[in-house]
Amino acid sequence: LAEIGSIDAIKFIITKEYKDKSAGDEIYQDYSFDKLTNITIKERLAWRKKCADLGNFICLKELAIIYRDGKEGVRKNIAKASEYERRISINSSHFELESEKYEIDRRWKEKRDNTLDYLLNQKESSKQQLELARFYSIEDSGRSLIYAKKAYDLGNKEAAELIYWYYMQNICEDKDNINKADYYLKEWLTTGEEPSKYSSSNEYKYSSISIIADYYLESPCLVERNLDKAIEWYQLSLDYPYEINDFLYSELNNMYTNAPKYISKDPFVNVYLSTLKNHNDYILDMNIRLGKMNFAISSFDKLYEALLLKGDVKEAYYYGLLLNYDVNNVAMFYSLSDIERKNIEYRVADYLKEIQK
Image 1 (tube, one colour):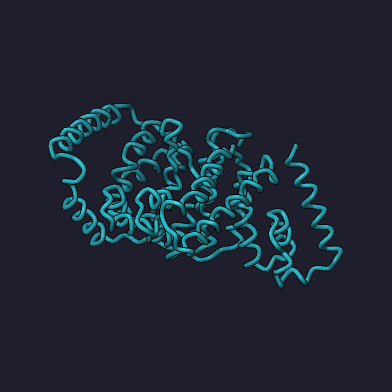
Image 2 (cartoon, rainbow, N blue to C red):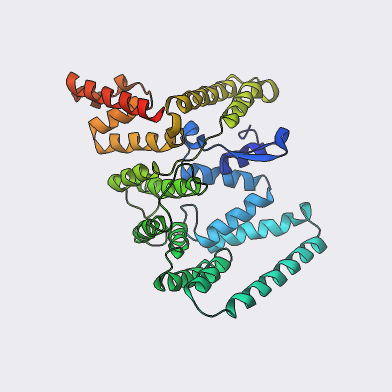
């Protein structure tokens, strides 16, 4: 669908979000999409560019912000940001009347100014500095960082979250930014309560941890590959469980099954969709196999990849078995003795029994 220019399909690839019209436009997120497609940060950026080339206002705006602020693993490029802004102005007549845009902007500015006045008139404290950091986090990340660091220095560790995101969003600006992001993510995760079972905040923290782990593994722009760090973060992500809704995968299977009837008789398209469906079937099976740890399929898979690259034969074999991969096709595993294989197989069986409780 995306290959033939479906904006909805492209936006699904970019955001991993699926709007279910039968459930009142409720939005579901396919957290395993990256696993299904092995999509990289660069490939997702390419899809965003294709979306923009089709004239989509939202994609144009997002790319303008990405290049202006240096997000999504790319360096700041004011010239490219300006080009996308120019294309927005050219296409603006397709989206909103100028009078409507003016009224929306006016109301937003009035509300913004009132909020800022209120915050600036508060007595300086770590809480006030943190609120100012949050206020500026969207429109002025540099100023947000200044306030966040003041709040942090005053003892408010909640500010570490904003500082972490600043360095992640500017990861390509300085090779030391990944180290700063690493430090402040650890500081953020130590604030508040210990992670509890299926906490409402766990999904967000799991995602945040996975992002920095992916950077260490994939090493885009200035980030140097660090397999030990990647493994450390993927393992830590396992401490933040959240519930997975199988309904989404069933809906996706229906889409993958029925799409060829409507979009193409091209055998290559059908093979592509069939492959996606087979992978999705695998995810549904793994949701059952991994029980309460089904949220961690992506982390387990990335751990397997990182451990293979590191040459940690025993641990890689463990995660390969856990994910039910065909480990017989991996030459590295032939170095394991029969006793070593058996011990790892027992370990996997014990773990699967434990997570099914």
